[in-house]
Amino acid sequence: MVILGGGVGGTIVANQVARQMSDDLKKGTLGVTVITDSEQHVYQPMFLYLAFDQVVPSEAKKPERGLLHRYVKMVVGAADHVDQDQKTVVMTDGTSVPYDYLVIATGSRPAPEQVAGLPEGGHLFYTEEGALRLRQALHDFEGGRVVITVGVPHKCPVAPLEFTLMLKAWLEAKGLGQKTEIVYTYPIGRIHSLEPVAQWAAPVFDDQKIESHIFFNPEQVDPEHKTITSLEGETLDYDLLVAVPPHTGQDVIGRSKLGDAGQWVPTDRASLRMKGSDDIFVLGDATDLPISKAGSTAHFEADVVAANLVSLLNGGLGSVRYDGKVFCFIETGLTKATYITFDYLNPPKPSEPTEMIHMFKMAYNRLYWLTPAGLL
Ligand SMILES: Cc1cc2nc3c(=O)[nH]c(=O)nc-3n(C[C@H](O)[C@H](O)[C@H](O)COP(=O)(O)OP(=O)(O)OC[C@H]3O[C@@H](n4cnc5c(N)ncnc54)[C@H](O)[C@@H]3O)c2cc1C
Image (cartoon, rainbow, N blue to C red; front, side, top):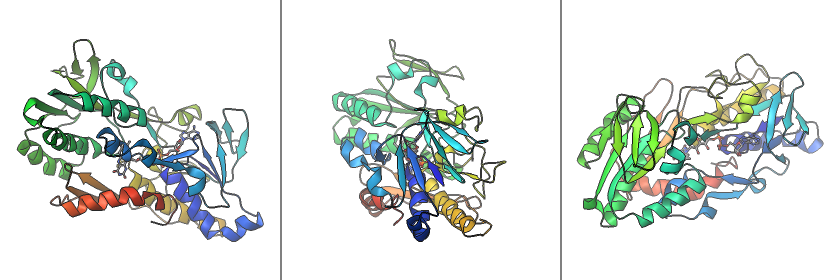
């Protein structure tokens, strides 16, 4: 069995299968291999806190090898493409890794280059490099107009709201509240894709005097004149531009001709099998499912994929179904947070933010490493 991608979803699958099938792995009658292009496992939610200088980069990563079950083989290298006919993953160095079952867990990537001028004129906190640049810009900021703009699709749907509310509190704590205007743009006709979250957040933004512009799909940034223009024709001035850019699936999906135009893999929403395939499973950000691309989604999906693989390897039918479960904390400033939990049938209902929920989130940030290990 081969798992392509050593992020949260791929690592959980590998460890759960290895733990349940450890006798077979020990005897050599089963092999579990994780292919990852980085020796480091990255906990991406830390980038939000990195931008505000609340953590340092080393707190967001640990060696992937240390998180994997000892019987799981790890191949470090970039996969070039999947050859479905030969049932192999072909690596960029020309070597091949054969599979009987393949799990695609390659995640997604921000694509700021899809908005002309954005890489030069804007900041992002979705990568370590971007968060560090933004950290410096915030450190140097002395007041003005901050525009936060959002493209779709993107991972962690609540992160733009969290960043905006954290920024508001952070600027006030720094004494810049009166000297700063915060403008938030969102591509559709409300300020969040999930309607109950939009209904909850709109009055919070009003209370905090955060100006929102809906139906704003970022199209072009003019770094010289410091303006951003939407597809709809609206232009906004900024002193500091922070973007959550649109995302795409990984290029390995495009090169393998497994995905749609956005390089998302067509996936059955219950079985998590790639559509039209019996031996390929897909999870996490890599799927084309119209649900939140979040670490918790990858986690709940990984439980289903691992259970089905263990069932199939033991002669079962692999019929465990994913119910669409997602859980997200939402930071609402620097000291309080709320959370949402939802699935295919039950919409989210954000509750009143509390300090306790914020403290849970802080604690989870430290405990995260138990999640890929399959222990939490
Ligand atoms: C700022 C920020 C805040 C976030 N906050 C939250 C949050 O609060 N809660 C939450 O649930 N989620 C949050 N997320 C989202 C979460 O991090 C992702 O949704 C999650 O990591 C997706 O898991 P995954 O396993 O699908 O992909 P990833 O964890 O991204 O893993 C993909 C893996 O595939 C590897 N890979 C890709 N291409 C190749 C290739 N060609 N060859 C070999 N390896 C390859 C990558 O190196 C990586 O190891 C946040 C994300 C960001 C950026």
